[in-house]
Length: 323
Image (cartoon, rainbow, N blue to C red; front, top):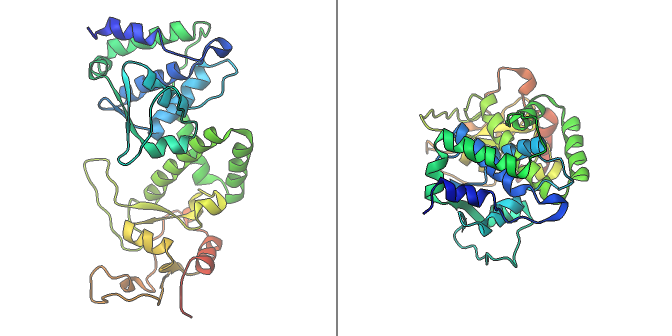
């Protein structure tokens, strides 16, 4: 019978690599899942690869791991499939043989092929009860980290620190930090870092613009955590690794695509320039030409305005015109 005693046995007999006293990755992932359930980030037995889960993984690693193991979120998320309570669900169309001979070592590959992990429903029902969570948390700590006597609550301060950098660092400062991280970390850890920073950028830019498209004025408020506004890089992230606020715009999805494809740009007076290389029904309420020469809506705080040098780069390198 799969009751609490059964899962205590599972949690205390995790299959781990034996090097350096035993790999801590699976216990850290389980502790992080407990944190996400407690904070309301996980609501059922589908465990998605979310920024919150990765942030808690990083936080718990810093608290509990004192060995020379390398922090890596991808490995335990994949290899937990060797435990009886964890099943990986692949995204439609992905073909990956899940057995001991395979291993996903790339975070980007994991995020591409894996939709979510499915935990036993009986286990998840137990984890929704605070007393059971505390029992299993204590079991994990006592079993795998018995020499760590102090206790510090895990948190998502790392996401807050990224947000602070995005809002207040200069582009040069920020890009230097990204380059230092790239030089210091292995490729998998760097991929995880970029995933987190991309998430924070996508969250912060719409907030700065009051969740409103700076061109169309579209704003939709819902009772659920649903946004219709995208965070758009002016210079593509792949070009500069610049996530600072001056390289961002809040756009609705159709205008985001038009901006990325060079059908629109923004001039030195923050006015929209529409390309002349395409045709559309100018009478349509959804036309792009209606925004030509319109000034965009800017954040009230001037230091959060898009940088002129970034807009100039976009006009020179992305914007398309027959002239």
